[in-house]
Image (cartoon, rainbow, N blue to C red; front, top):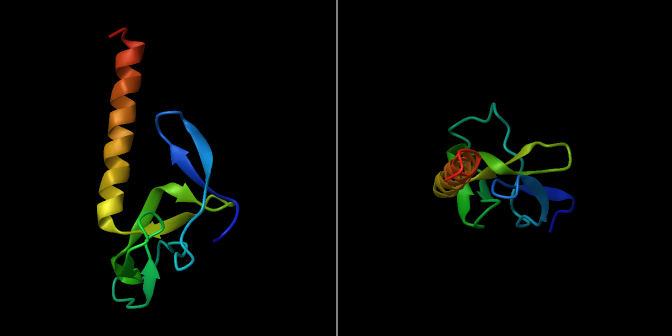
Length: 95
């Protein structure tokens, strides 16, 4: 497992230590969609072609570079962020 990686917790609004699978990689924003190298999703561990991954919104290394995740995990990250933002707004509005 790689060390000193963190995962953003949108509900607690803080970073927590996180271990990514051995086959996961940092996602280069300039990665070709045709890159066929197999990597593991940093969230669920599913094996996927690098060109079909997206940048995580929650999982980062020590330099705050995003790991590659599959699109299903990206959707889950978005759902968590939306739910946390909704809860924060309701708390601020006294609901």
